[in-house]
Image (cartoon, rainbow, N blue to C red; front, side):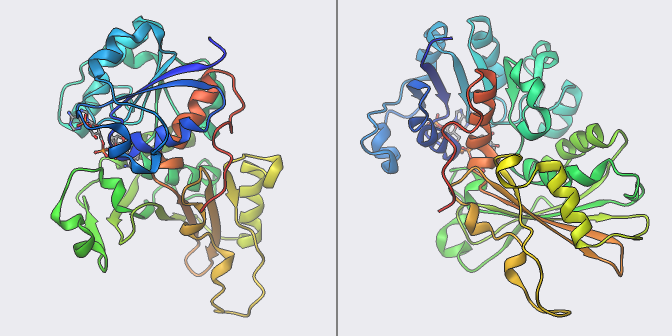
Amino acid sequence: VRDELSVGVVGASGFTGRELCRLLLGHRRVGRILPAARSAEPFERRHRNLLGSGLQFVSAERLVEQARELDVVFFCTPAGEAMRLAGHFLDEGSAVIDLGADFRFPDPATYRAVYGVEHAAPHLLAQVVYGVPELARDAIRGARLVANPGCYVIAALLAVAPLIGDDGVDPGALVGIHAVNGTTGAGNTSRPELHHAAVANDMLPYSLEGHRHCPELELQLARLAGRTVRVDFNTAHGPFARGIYLQASVQLRRGDGVNRDVLLDRYKERYGAGHRGEHFVLVVDFPKTGGCNAKEYDVYPDMASVLGSNFCHLGVDYDAAHAVVRVVSVLDNLVKGAAGTAIQNMNLLFSFDESEGLRHYGL
Ligand SMILES: NC(=O)c1ccc[n+]([C@@H]2O[C@H](COP(=O)([O-])OP(=O)(O)OC[C@H]3O[C@@H](n4cnc5c(N)ncnc54)[C@H](OP(=O)(O)O)[C@@H]3O)[C@@H](O)[C@H]2O)c1
């Protein structure tokens, strides 16, 4: 590995590609960024927040030709693209991190069932590492091909990982996941329902018959729990551009001895408290001071506080009447839900400080 990495970004004209370039420009160990797009538009005209960056789009074909010079290639493309090209980059010695879904399932039949197309590179699936750094750090360190998780999935996994393997959780109950994503979660393809005038005062539920991230989440939860976990997964777009607000409900068999403080201790044990634990996963543990039913908004995470950052804030409480643990998880879908986690994964692959390029706080 060279002192400074050469990095390719396929799909750099899109939302996650732009965010990845923005973060890579501030990364001290990245020397060269080659953003690839099919459009002939100048990079800085397309991404005006990156005016002055000096970056220029190249074609994906040019990246393919220069593969040998690239230490790592990120795919910020719709499902179907990364699996066509990843093998070439791996053969030429680059690591590959796919922000899309092509490598998230170990089994091509599941990929076909969820994404509706045949997998183009099933021979690569055995070497994939599923990249949630907080849950698979050691495996990611030794990987060459990383599947970055879906944005809802990472928010949900971080929310329920401290609970899901516990004997106290009712294995017969569905885990409830209710999440609202910003409109950037839909990608930059133009849709009338997502125009500002349409969505500004609205909520847009979608994929209620079964979101593509649900099988991905159930697979990862089964790995964590060591048993089948079934999820009631509900998604909507909200009237904001970026951010995921997610609430999880986990049914316990019975609630003896459970309360908010006990749960907060559990979460802080899992993720560490403040600077001593996970850098990017923070548990909001401000004590409640009001009486019963006081509306203490600030004891739970708020989504606006993590926007622009790689942080995931978690909050937890307990509904004793129903023995249900409620967890709030907030993150920026384009950062911790996509480009930020991808850079965390790159940092692990190249043995850099895991937080390099990602230390800034929310807006
Ligand atoms: N948005 C999120 O919050 C989010 C979070 C986590 C993961 N992801 C995943 O990350 C990937 C990129 O998402 P995004 O939101 O950045 O998407 P996007 O804004 O729609 O951008 C995708 C880019 O891929 C390029 N592209 C290359 N081949 C394409 C093809 N065959 N069809 C359409 N576009 C093609 C397009 O650029 P050119 O036309 O210029 O080549 C486009 O700008 C997706 O797989 C998505 O599921 C997204």
